[in-house]
Length: 381
Image (cartoon, rainbow, N blue to C red; front, side, top):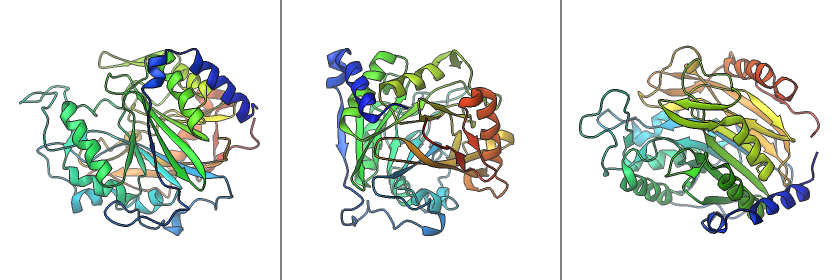
């Protein structure tokens, strides 16, 4: 097991050898520590719900939660009630409990912009847009930061994304995933950097691995813990396995998923989390760090299929120390019930599926998932 110091040296070496313009493009947003007085006003986060809380953290530890694709619906369809809050009614307690909750926000929160599908969408073109007021539901649900690195972040062009960013900022929700963007949040004295990647020009570059590792290396110099989100891989109910090699969807190059995830760990990432395939995938342990290749869909008002494996989702919680080593973890199993609302699953079907996929795809490097979703991490390796 490498020390954090060695990983930092390797990250700095990668950064030094990268193109200077890539590193210079970094955008950093720093948020207050959880030890600071609690904020008030429209962006304030409610107190955590203790019933769903992870195991108590010790000094220097931070618990990070991740969920997959989340969206509020699409233009022309009735929105979820309560300015979007109804979408998270059954998951709110679990989302609020961890130190930092991170999710993949698909579509835009906007009223303007031109749809990528034109005036009469059809075929396989989907454009997702919801009212900017729904950003309040993102915050009240418990999200601290969201990734905008995905295929629907530009559904209404630059204007749609600008409105989305403004709405999130107004409600105190941090965001990451745009080109060159590193977002740093503080919890309990620990600095956590979030970086999002996708194979699109409006996102940090998943297909340019050299540029991606340079950005991660830069993030590692600015924070104690680095979390990378990747929107990668083929789509569909039959795509639960993480293949070797490159993946494609709808004619798009979706990257070499395993190679990318391992490269960013080599560059300094401590936790890599995935979305994009719309289904759950396995969890791998690589060089002492965790890679969760996909958490599938999470929440979407009349957006997602809800049959078979498409109905399985969850909240991944990982507690790390200040050096980025995983100490404890859990996958909280949920199911997506019509019209797209995630709810706790007492049968723990998601945990069973992820445990099986982890073993089948990664062998001894696969993370064992217990019957109720506990990750068997053992001693750091």
